[in-house]
Length: 350
Image: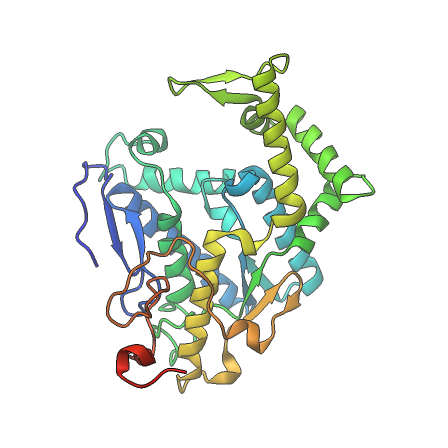
């Protein structure tokens, strides 16, 4: 793990490393100081929710979904879609299941903002006078902060009931991952509007949110100036009208053909985490091939071939430290050193 960079008392430095050193899977860079303490408290809160689900005998499913506004998406809409998908899973799969919805714990949702503010209140002895607004002004959490948190949640299992598996860092709290797909997105828009086509449903949703949600309106009706200030778009001006239409088109393009875990950086890292955990489970005598973590995408279980391949990295740091395959993200190989390619080992290639 790299040494933290210089930071203020509240913490605006960064650190790079494996979120769970005992199970080195993917390296991330995250903020230190207050943000690190906040996210560590967040991990404990989520673990307590998972422990309660286990105590109730629930089957635990992690929902992997887009959250950020990258590529034309909108964070508020992503939260709405994730909540709708979690409700659908709970209704169709039944009360035996517990779906861990990450949007409920991130700043993009009101629930997540409230929880993080509560953590800061609990940390006021360490960071007197520090509010969420002040901390955000110092440094905003990025993908690496959240992926460090979610990696710990997905990997660490020091609290599960099964003693033989406790503390093995094999994701023992989880039975399945559900990767949100385009069918889930279209189901949401069908639920949220009365339109007959996907285009009509998205148009109705956009128009309603634009007129009823202050946050949604400001995200589409304002633009940044050269002085880091915002101004309302004047649609009678060609430049502003062009900018507005470009945003609308990006929104409709994203949610009609792209909105799924396949276009989420965090979901890419979560897929690679699933892949590595299952590799380790297959080799572990307390698990074995019959107890790998199941994977679902877009309402169906994925095939053997799907789940036995890694994908390109998301927020994971790239590089080639010892024990990591060249040309991929910094994903630790669970079975020791990787054999060198033929061109490096001296054997003839085809």
